[in-house]
Amino acid sequence: MEKSNAWGAWLALIAALGFSLKAIFVKLAYPYGVDAITLLALRMGFSLPVFLWVGLAQQKAGAALSRGDWLRLVVLGCLGYYGASILDFWGLAYISAGLERLILFTYPTLTILIGVFFQGKEFTRREGLAIVLCYTGIGFAFAHDLGLGDAHSVLIGGLLVFGSSVSYALYISGSAPMISRLGALRFSALASLVSSAVTLLHFGIAQPLTAFIQPLPVYGWGLAMAVIATVIPVFAQSAAIRHLGAGRASLYGMIGPMLTIGFGWWLLEEHISLHQMVGAGLVVAGIFIVSRK
Image 1 (cartoon, rainbow, N blue to C red):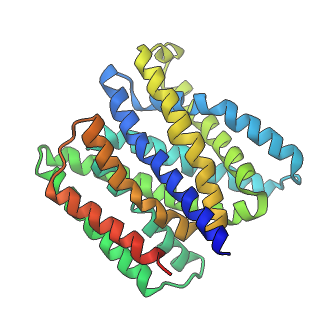
Image 2: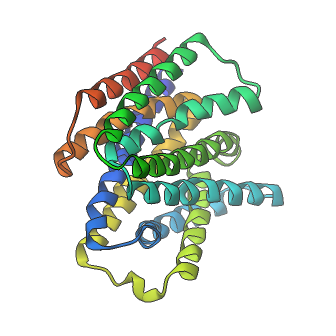
């Protein structure tokens, strides 16, 4: 049990590192004029061969899926790496990468609340304290961005990213029973195949194929996003959920905001304020409280 928990913690931290870089890659690609759905289509298109290979291999090895399994996979695929991602990409056009990551990482607390209200799970005092600390930390960072410029844009971006967080929390909550039934690799690959298909369908409706003609750096950031911020963390996150459960695995991932703030300062020259540091510190404190024995 101890070994399983340790593996789960490491996998959750690897996933957090990969996901924390996604906002950085998006911000680095946007100056070249690429729009959100085209960039998301590049991300999922580059990821598609890996998900297809793993999905086919796992599908042959596993039991046949029922109609209900496929329906749940379609719903979760639409909520996860399509719905959550497109809302997040839109939000990043309005707010800093650091604030985006702090708002997006409300999803662990939302996952716990979904478990309590809809799945009959217990709510502990430690989880309550972690939620208070995390949301207080997010409030500090939000106040910092509101003071930087256009408050209207910050509010729009914040609402879009919070919508992304709700979508991802629903995905994480629904994925735990599916992972138990199908296994981490099989579920991740099939759900991500659905996400890729819906993303490419959205792109086909919204944009001409010529929109795929982009400056070379956009392809580079899209590929980095596919490998480092999609394929690796997707499988790591699903394996962490298998070891720890959805609530605990997502709470370990709350180290992500601090990583994104650091990468934003290093790669995007985003200013780090006292508000952000206090906010990130409170978020990390929430992680330590909920994860200690």
